[in-house]
Image (cartoon, rainbow, N blue to C red):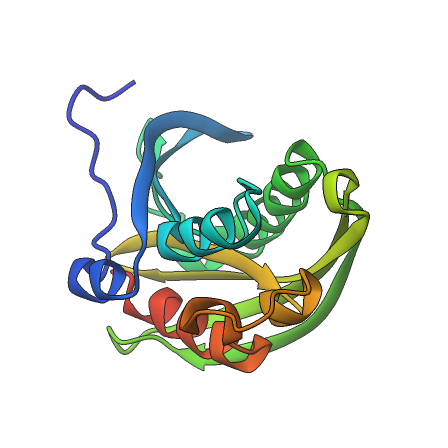
Length: 203
């Protein structure tokens, strides 16, 4: 494992202004190729402002939205004859499977893959996105949290994975909060725009 991992560049100002908080940094083997071990240096963020607003409103502490970015490295390095385009489909498939596993680890069920989209990230590279849907039973308040997740994979200055998830309803509606503060009034389209902006800004 590298002693000085190359973490991805993330939009620090945008994350701070949006009320996000870094909750984990890790380097781990994310999958194996026939000729190389693939390690991911990952930063994980929680929407702390949203979490605090819910906690203040109804006393429930839960992670409602998350975002992460990963930079991949290969040990040993890819051979000169193996270009990024040759292994990008494998990286993409592994990243999507890992995201579904992450949702399952967080307790989500009914995990389904959705549509694919192509976007141009801020670096100018093209990324392919895949959506996911999933549900989580919130027994404490007798409600079901339905979410949409997005996973983006591309190759620019190395391979990058960026992903996250958000509720499919405003939290004020889901949690029946009267006179909700601004963070709980945000709509799924607000969440979607913010997440895709964060994904595109990863370098």
